[in-house]
Every structure is written in C-alpha cells, then in structure tokens.
Amino acid sequence: MEKKLAFLGPRGTFTEEAARALTGHQGLRYLPCQSIIDVLNAVAKEDVEYGVVPMENSIEGTVNSTLDWLIHEVDLPIMAELALPISQHLLVAEREEQLALSSITRVLSHPHAIAQCHNFLQTYLPHAVIEYTNSTAMAAQMVSEHPDEPWAAIGTRLAPEIYPLAFARQNIEDYSNNYTRFVLVGQHPMELPDSPKEKTTILVTLPEDFPGALYQVLAAFAWRKINLSRIESRPTKKGLGSYYFVIDIEQKMDEVLLPGAFAEIEALGCQVRQLGTYPFYLQKVTS
Picture 1 (cartoon, rainbow, N blue to C red):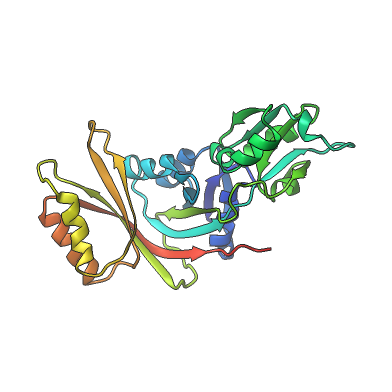
Picture 2: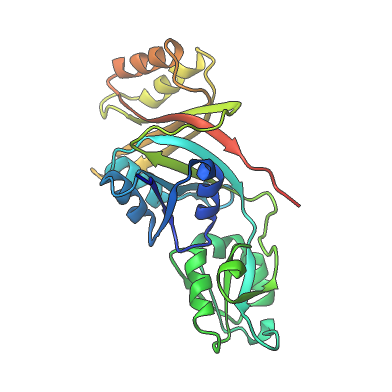
C-alpha cells in the first residue's frame, strides 16, 4: 500500500520543498493540508504515515503552533530535521504588461514571510495593504485566481511553476542567511540517509517547589560535557509563571550519558519527556 505524507499546503510551500528533500527517495504520496495542526492531527490519527511541518525560522524564531501542538495535543516522535535556506520572491499574476510596484494595492503571504521582507515592503510598497494567509502557497494561489486585481504575493521560487504567476522582484528577503528548520514526524519507521549530525529533543517540567531547579537541570548536562543547542520555555497552560522547557541536545540517544543525565534530572523532581532522537540535515544555499 502506498504510504502518505502530509505537509503544510497548498502545493508549492517551503514545507513541500523540505518534505521532498527529506523523503523524496521513499516513493510517498504527498498530501497538502490547510494548517500545521491539520498535518499533525492527520499523522496522530494515522490518516497518513508521516508529516512535515516548520519548527523554527532563523529570523522570526519558533513556529509556536508546531511546538505547542507537539507538546499539548499529540504524541508524535520527531524523526528527522532539515534546515532549508529560505528565499522570498514578489509574485504577481501573469499579464501582457508587467504590473508596476506602485500599482500594487495588496500584498498577501504568511506572517513569517511578511516579516522576513519588512525592509523591502517599507521601501517599495509602503502604500500596500498587508493580508496574512496560512501559507505562502495559499497567497500565491489567491493572487493567481484574481488576475484582474492589483495584488501581489510573497512566495517561493516554485510558485510560478504551479500557478500562472510572474516574478515582480526576486530575493526580497531582508537577510540572506535565512533558514527554516522543518521536522519530520510519524509513527512508522523510515530509512533515512546517514547524517554527520544527530540531535535529541526533550521536554522538561520543573517542580514548583524547587528554587534553582533549572540551574540544576543544566548542570546535569554541563558536567557531562553534553552540548545543548537550544533551550526554550513554553507555557504549561496551567497558570502564570508555569513553563515547560524544550531542550535540544546535540547528540543522539545513547546508553550511558543521556540516560544518566535524565535520571539525575528526574531525581530533582523534574519530569522528562523525549520528543525525539533523530538525524539533522543542512541544505546549502545554491546560487
């Protein structure tokens, strides 16, 4: 039976590009979903075997809906991570005569894409109304479906291959070193290419009556010389000042170091939940 993978759609998103880069060798059927939550729920309900969603952008930070849904609503292991270079482009409907920037009245895109192009928008399109969409591909689709409107979308290089669009301007992002981390989740094993870098992600809940507990948690890794690449707090939704801590560890799960660190942390009265141990891939910028 053909296995399926859900991704944040519609077609042409960076998420689809990441999904194909991660799993293109698997012969999967790729299914676009309207939201990150739809992707994760489809995997959790086993309507599809796998899902790919954005986790963090190097400019805008964590994609909160991804992290919060993985923490609170579903129990899906992270199977792999890909850092994908992000390049944004201003797209307009195909016309006999190119639409001038001064004529554009509305710019549509995902909030992160809009934020990544702030300087360009302020300089060249300060008069345009900004409209947020669920994805860059949805913005591209909406602009293509309204060719008589003086609208523009911020989207991917794939968009004009899918929709009747043209580039008004290319590479309009504020920062060239712009990457987004995408994660592959699923409940079924998958053979993945070897990677020189492995990661483990855990969720730590601190005891409420232990002052200095976070320091003790970090010390359990420090004296073992275990490197942490990220630590982030997210609300437990149980009250003000109550947080989970998401910690990325720069090594795969082993039989000695990490279990020992986790046991020491749990002895402090903390709870440790493993979100995944997985290979990390970095896709280089291509000229």
